[in-house]
Image (cartoon, rainbow, N blue to C red; front, top):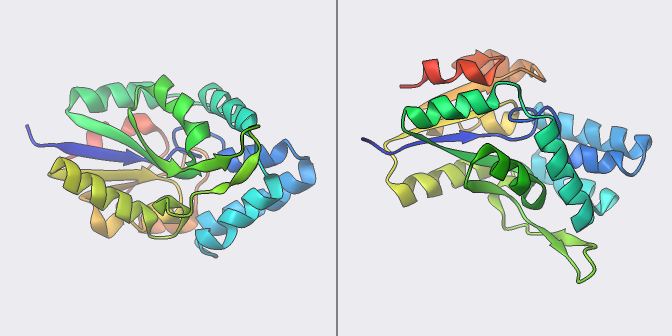
Length: 213
């Protein structure tokens, strides 16, 4: 059987939340609104992700403990058909990989809940007390074009013959020319550019297996 990889975005796709925005919410409503606006402008394609990535984190300065809390929140806000979708994908021979501009330490507990072994996200740095000490700017998904690099690397490493990307934002859409199939997701946020340009667009993750080659 040919090796088949399906890359799935996390925030506003596998879960209803945007993890970094939820970390901002812990700092009060004003900071949440500021970060949410920055996130949406990036995901709608109006500004580059790298222009807001470090800025949001410097405003929030999330701790290790707070990232664990967001990990639990991801689980509590799981897309209703996600587990059904993943079971069908595995049955059909697809290996799911989370590829996200979110934070690795927050996503890992959610990935374990989903039974997904591979997470390609952005690593936070903490001091010995668990306080924020920056992020790893070498993680590709902290920048526009980063998800394509992740897909290319995993495709090469596993000699995959088929690749699919699923996501809601502009950073997901830009992978469309580099995968065999791109599926836009609008179950939480229907982004006009993604809906207009995606070859397929769904509102439930459970609709995806039937679309796959």
